[in-house]
Image 1 (cartoon, rainbow, N blue to C red):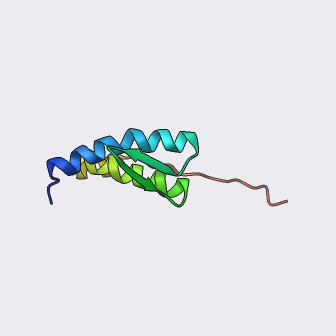
Image 2: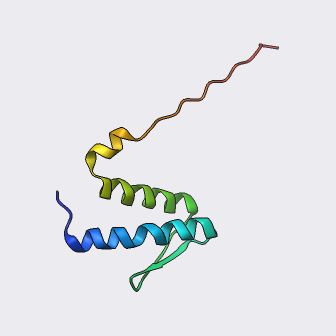
Length: 76
C-alpha cells in the first residue's frame, strides 16, 4: 500500500528526533508537536529501523547487510 504525503512527512520528521533521543538516552521523543514515550531504547531502535525501511522502500530491506559471528574453541 502506498504511503500518503502526510505519513511520509511524519516519518521524515520522526527519524532525526528518534536518533537524537537514542543518543541522548531518553525514551521520550517530540516532533511536529507530537510526543511519544517509548518503553525502551531497543523499542526506539525498532521504530527508527521501521521508519527508515518504510521510506527506503521494499527493495532496501533485502539490500541491508547481514553479519555472521564465528566462535572457535580449543576444547580445553
